[in-house]
Length: 535
Image 1 (tube, rainbow, N blue to C red):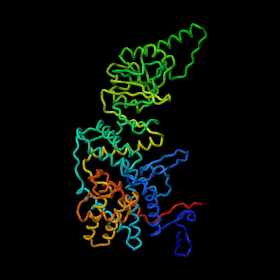
Image 2: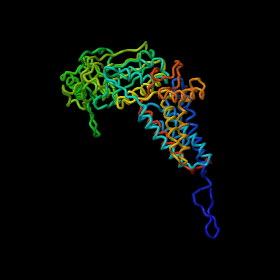
Image 3: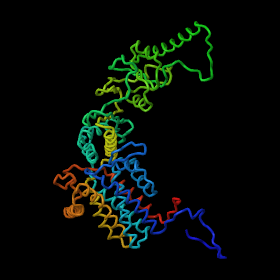
């Protein structure tokens, strides 16, 4: 640390315990930060695109995750460096806002940092670079608006939505069934979407998974699945036109809240107590029967006695159902959640056309399906797969597809994928750089070069010659003046992304460019890093 002297030449300390702190300043700090950001981006670079690789992450307690979803990789990676953490936040905010494009946004930020490093070495001030990047990101943002296409779809014609979801799923493990999964995702979103308000509440879509079966067995259920079985093995396994009582009160005798002691000194008193308890249970079960319930779903457990009584009175019941599931069941069946037996009325019952218990494979695994509900606004996507990791990864992929469908309902504009939008923006930004006289034009050109990183990574991951492929596509875009030419990752034989049906949402792409630029500006402005040293 720098030592300071007063006017008499005596040294004095500025920072407390300064010998225990390390300090990086000026260009060294910027280079160290850029190196950290680039390191994180390099990890994700190989998992971009349809031919991207997957990462296997082991958590401290030995749980293994296999994924190529950028946000998940960074969340599980346990990054320690402060700048690395900024990159993790970056992909997380893309995930929260858009749900898709989490890998691309980090790769983009990494290449912006790489370009900035070259400019810093030439002696350009970091603030000027940041300003240039800001100007360039605005140009790219507006250019995306110009090359975007409006997508017309209706409840009858959902093909455009399905095509866009297929683009998202093609870079995941599940790409062999991307057609069926995309259809499931689109149907689920349309089932809960409010097309007038252009709003989709994704909380109404529950994604459940069960190991076993094959990926093709994944299905969409217009209703709710509960991972429970009937409380008594002899209760009926199928109930048609069920009236469901949804309770959050337990089937047991009430316990006084205060401290109490019951003295029983004769057999008669004990008998009376037992009869009283039995009467409680009787009243409870009778109350449910009187209202006309044909199925009881309870948040708590029952006594064995209550279970036996329910069985005898032909009242099937499901116990220990979680709070979130109860809410979804209430939304789907149009019922009300009842906290006390005294408040049970016929109006508060939920209606479902079919409640059935389904067993899986040779195991004792059973689930309850509640289908044909009065209000089919809550749906469930039920995923099957060979192992737990596959199911978890499919859940993440489906989540991305649901988010894409939701974004398209909110904003119908799309741009073409395969790196074509980035190349087009890069050409536009390069052309605009000449209009700026100052040092910023270097930064604007650097931004244009950085945009090429995504198509370059796509080509590299697909096993093509990166520079050759990129320059061929770029010259084709300039020559024909069309923004549809991208990298032919799947080796179809055409660069035209319209023919390959590779689409991405416009807001997703714009968000990527804005978020990446913001983070890079923030990193460039740091010129002094004071941190506690290791010893």
